[in-house]
Length: 193
Image (cartoon, rainbow, N blue to C red):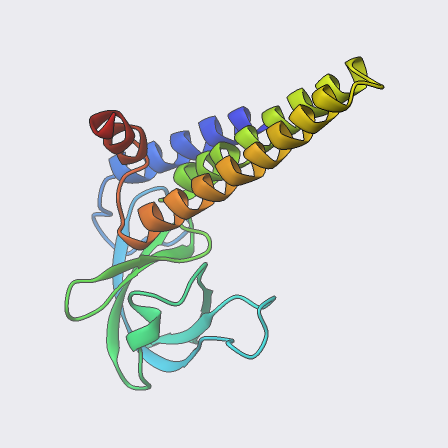
């Protein structure tokens, strides 16, 4: 599946989630409606010792067995969780897709659909400038073999691509850290020109 198809599919899942109605009663089977369930935190693990493991929490409802929930990142809710805290889990299709704390903060779990389109698009935005300038620089150096000026210029073009890619990554980091929508990046860039 191409990046464009992944972004399109992620956008569709996010639209479905945002349009999903609240469940009228506790769903007996996995359902597309949204059900809010109160949970007590049994444990919260940021997995800071191993970068390959996802942060996770164990949440216990009032009258059932515990749910193990994983997250893409530690903040804003998971990082503040302590044992015996009360949180609300939003359940859709039999999975907890979002956790809310007593202060009203929300955090998507690793199966939550919100935010994936921005992540996919952000990765593409960071990769495209590096790839295009590296390709242009490489083709230039191949077509101008033996000419030192052209070879030097091709090297400069390739390094320029690395700089653009680095700037793209920093911009995406700032966008993610400040919870700006993905469209804010071109809007801010356009206003500054």
